[in-house]
Image 1 (tube, rainbow, N blue to C red):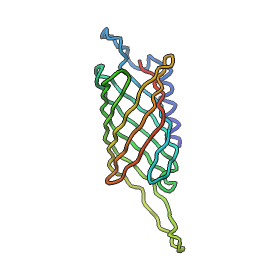
Image 2 (cartoon, rainbow, N blue to C red; image 1 turned 180 degrees about the vertical axis):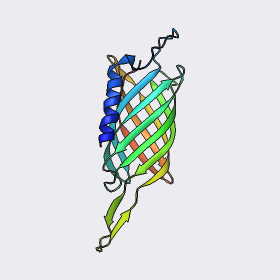
Image 3 (cartoon, helix red, strand yellow; image 1 turned 90 degrees about the vertical axis):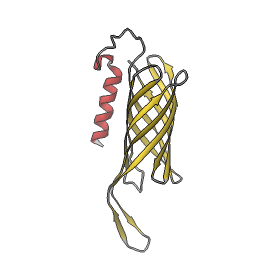
Image 4 (cartoon, rainbow, N blue to C red; image 1 turned 120 degrees about the vertical axis):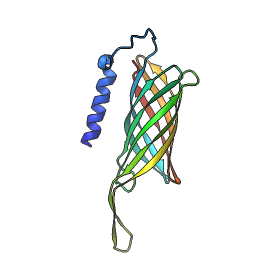
Length: 171
């Protein structure tokens, strides 16, 4: 939890301070750095759990960007919690629409489970490969963007659906 609070504090400081990165002196007025904070829900196996995280995108051009996502779902997977870390490539094909594809790891925490017959089974923490496809649209509210987001995570033969909103500040 301390790590999550620390990472959230860092991203909020970046959002509130445009000078955290070097200014774009190329004469291109379009922002290059797009950090954000995400809140929403992850639906897996018919259960929805609260999720939160941070994201960052660097735009190479008006059409293309790349970045990372860190997302946490504390109560997922029998309360063990799930962390997702991935790198992504983004396309901006029309206005403020953003399509993304990412690769990374999902880490599931360890937990104990009662089989209903008095036997306790311990499940160790483990990591799995993850592929994420996402779509969002950025609505501008003053200097901030509010981006409703939908993502599909593919973990082996299983799928999770993530939906929520990201608040971003481009500079």
